Image 1 (cartoon, protein in one colour):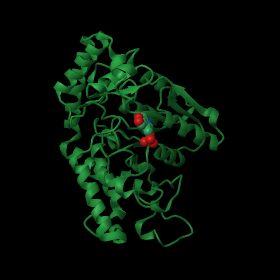
Image 2 (tube, rainbow, N blue to C red):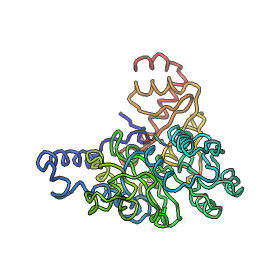
Image 3 (cartoon, rainbow, N blue to C red):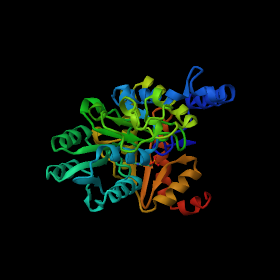
Image 4 (tube, rainbow, N blue to C red):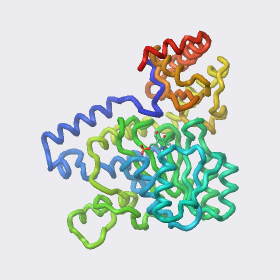
Amino acid sequence: MIYLDGNSLGLLTEEAESAVLRTLSEWRELAIHGWTEGMHPWLFLAERTGAQLARLIGAEAKSVVAMGSITVNLHQLLATLYDGKGKVLIEHSAFPTDRYALQSHLKLRGVLEGLVAVTPDEDAVEAAFVTGEFSCAVLPSVIYTTGRLLDMERLTASARANGVVLLWDLAHSIGIVPHPLDAWGCDAAFWCGYKWLSAGPGSVGGLYLNPRHQGNSPGLQGWFGSRKDALFTNDETLQPAEGAARLQLGTSHVLSLAPLEATAKSLADRGIERLRQESLALTALLRSEAENAGFTVITPREDSQRGGHITIQHPNAAALCRALRAHQIIPDHRPPDLIRFAPHPLYSTEEDCKTAVTTLKMLAEQGTFETEASLIP
Ligand SMILES: Cc1ncc(COP(=O)(O)O)c(C=O)c1O
């Protein structure tokens, strides 16, 4: 099988598999003592995993914690960093859950009309920032439809210059694109673990909180955001942990944190710069092969503007994707007309990329994809 869907669900790695099996045996052998005993006490797993994730995003370990999902982490960051005054910027092709989370947060605060969508383009976003009307913005590092990587450094600088707290959704870049969040002075970021991080379906995600915000009280409180020595003191008020760890809510999801710790470490050991170079070589090849084959590629040509996947626009995208699957090639379809190919440097080859495009061309030219697609439910 040629798997080109690492930006939706990364494949199982040996490291992830053994981490899950090890955690199961810890559960069996240690039971409740697994929280505090053994080689890998679960009580500190979220922070330990955060430290590995921090290596991928150029952050201090204490600024990162592994927790929640994108949706939950966005709610938490909004509650912690947005003061309810001023407009909030989003881009008009934002992923549904980002938009829904923002809508409900602003509705709770009674300021729903303050949510404004702009074109996902540096000039348009900057033009909005300089109006002085915005106090918060949520942007994706990589736009999930087009695969375009925004200029995060430029937008972060612009947001700071204009008093906007900018929250980055790193769903499509963490683990594949280097972005030094501390050096750029980003306010905060959040992500999931099941895409490029290959930590498994529905695995735990994470968030980054810049040191200048680490004195903030958590907007949403839960006992796992306490200092570890205060977990059971039953104080009248929460005694927040140091750093990003204070934004945790309930008990850590140990079985789905274990694979994330393992894969974040193995990706960081390989080196995010190396992964980026390998990924760029594969997406450049895919892009030129697809263009030479006559397809409309909507992902930018410039390396600096590409994330880890390329997107082809085709009126028969859905049927073509089903037909590709019948040929043991796994793409990703985004309705109505997008085909995404996401090669992963850990397991995709140049040959995979070429075969995917040749097969797609053959299917599109033969026009037999409707019949072939019917082979797949
Ligand atoms: C940009 C982006 N945001 C959010 C999500 C999903 O959020 P969650 O992890 O909370 O399900 C996805 C999933 O594909 C995504 O691509």
